[in-house]
Image (cartoon, rainbow, N blue to C red; front, side, top):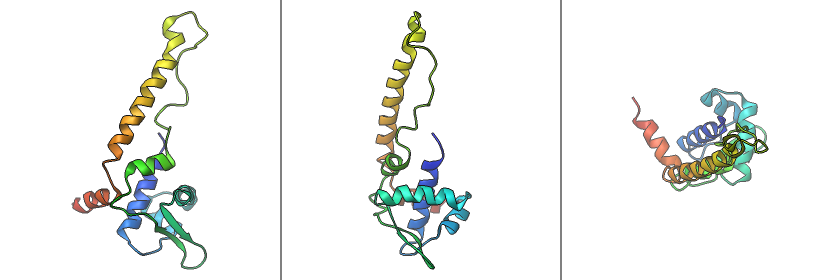
Amino acid sequence: MNSDFTIAVHSLVYLAYLPDHMASSDSIAVNVCTNPARIRKIMSCLRKNGLVKTKEGIGGGYILDCNPQETTLADIYRTVSHGTLKPNWCTGDPEQNCVVSSNTQVVMDEIFTEAELYFEKYLEKITISSVLEKIKLCP
């Protein structure tokens, strides 16, 4: 899995922390500790899926377009990272005579598919608001 999911969660929690305020890609990038172009790419995906609204020009930026008490981390994961739990490459060769080599990819695909389903079910229990509340409790 790449860091897009974490960046998306961080960005949405930051916007929830600043309700009714526009945040520029520059200000979000400073908070997330990445570059604004990466923020714009991820925020574009979140906008297409109705999680944020944008305003162009001076004073523009991003604002939440979802309810942080109802939007779950599973919603965010499905938006920016679905399918990334499974690695791009798996060992073995389905064409080989060896039972291990020829079947490892199929079995590992099943394992990663099941793991992703369990992961999404876990993330469905966590909302943007609950992440923000946990952050506020940190020393």
